[in-house]
Length: 125
Image (cartoon, rainbow, N blue to C red; front, side, top):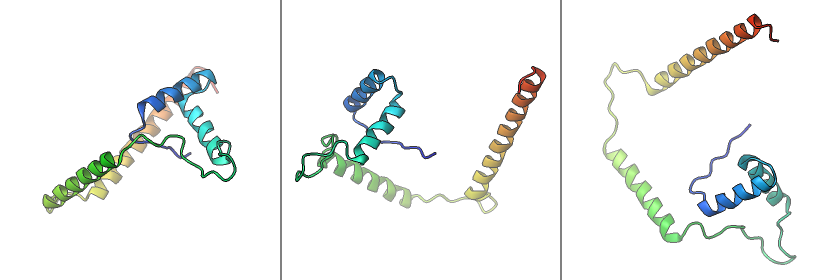
């Protein structure tokens, strides 16, 4: 199932979302899904002829956005000015990541095997 991460989510909006979720006996994640479903299905549609608008528009200003973009550009330029130079005998980053994933998968498999062995020895299914 896909995951959704929202950067710079306004704190006051998050608090309101938590309140609604608590009132509806849902988690914040569940309430977010309900709210998005309602929004995309048109439940929040405005009166006929009125343009649809976001429910929350003022969480970012043009100046903040421009400053964030400028900072990112500066970081990228800085990174380009100092490229990573690996020794010739160093493994490639792809190989390092692949090996780490394989180790993680092996470890997860061992943990799951151990859990299953315990379930069997305790008479579980």
